[in-house]
Image (cartoon, rainbow, N blue to C red; front, top):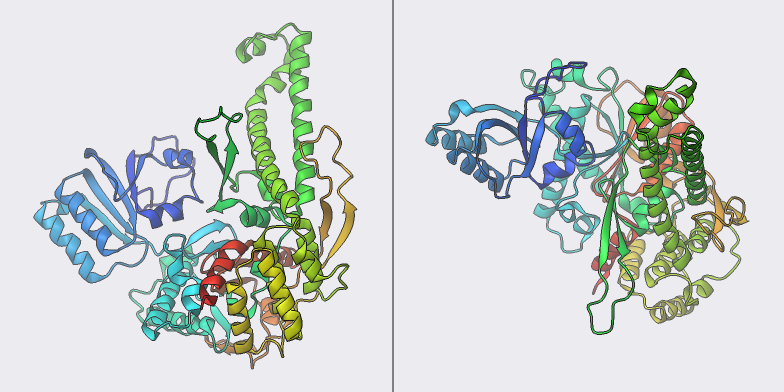
Length: 605
């Protein structure tokens, strides 16, 4: 698309065509996790601007638009054509544009005498956001429109529900067009996931019937990554498992998402500036630092799914390794009396200096390594502050025991009543997990005790009101989801690596080693009674797991929102299955605080 919808030439030395990229907020969210500003510049993008910002004319430059086909956006394109802002226009729509809106653009182009300047118009079918090679979400802007709250509110009208399902199906259709594959759809009966499955099935069939314009035949299919084999598409409903999104986690990526401001692979940290100002002066400001956690960061790729104590240990090892390399360069320069010399002067010396030349030439690599070490030191320190101040290790271990039906070493009431253990939100999360996973709900007397303790701790009880209604409605009390098989092995205090010179003083924080998580959906046999098969196929109707044995690719998608805990569980599960690929997707990505807020809105009387 950025190369005017022609495949870019590889290994070419020619300069790219310089151009302007215009996107709306949706386009910005799609591009942001995929391409850095430097990568955009390498592709010839000299300027990237929001569609609805004030833009000056640049009459001799071609422009690539990447926008949603909304009424407001179409009006702005028409205005750009009338104002003759650019030399030529390459219009790329994130979702398919309707004929009437296309006619509006054509009329504006005619009126502005700019028909020849509208060079190409494309439907890109890219209405989803790719966060990882094996993870996608549907949207970040306006995500409340398809949120868990929107789908499950009591006063929802049929027309609203249809609109929500259509939005989700449009994005999933885009996903499969981009993948170049027609899926085999599996889903449970009687919930939002089934509604999405039926609508997606219909949309795919209609597209395949139109042989001339089908997006799954001919050239478009050969571009698809999985075109040679149809992937299994498992649709799950958030209501099947409400405990996992509330769970305190212990892996690096999921912890960052839980306790820090982490959106679209960018984490924002607030740092205090300077000492306290004199009395009467303004309170001290906080500076905000942003860090991108991307696939180019090898440390992140290796450790994002690791337990946090391992990450802290690895950051310290990387720092020690960097200091050793830096000291070696300084030592060699010092021996040869070259402290002040630049790289060029050193390289002209005799062969005896080859070792030093090699060390100095690796300086750019060393500096990048130092940047990444600083990044992860700052992020991990911020996470550690939360772990220590909120005793997140204690919550994680307690919840694992609850979900694994293990023996508890202290009572739930003690943890809720402990004024030093966490924030009100942490206590509410813990109690909701207890309530959701309990085979028998607590007696009325016990329940009142818990309610009083939660209120005393400063908790808002609205989420609990909703969970009680939900549990009564779904009758989960009689058939609880099986959360067995998780659990952790407490390894005592984190004492092994953290010497006195370490950046991470982990005193009092437990080193909890993760065991393989088994989500309730994995342990439950999904037999032919639980599922409907929407795409005819010659495979026998067995379980999703047995289907995965036959098919090399699977996509698991959660309607109603997902989280990094489930994503990491799937990644770990796939590692044990050679030659298999699983992609995780969800309608929105939320952390526990955001999910509690939605439950609270649903539970308000």
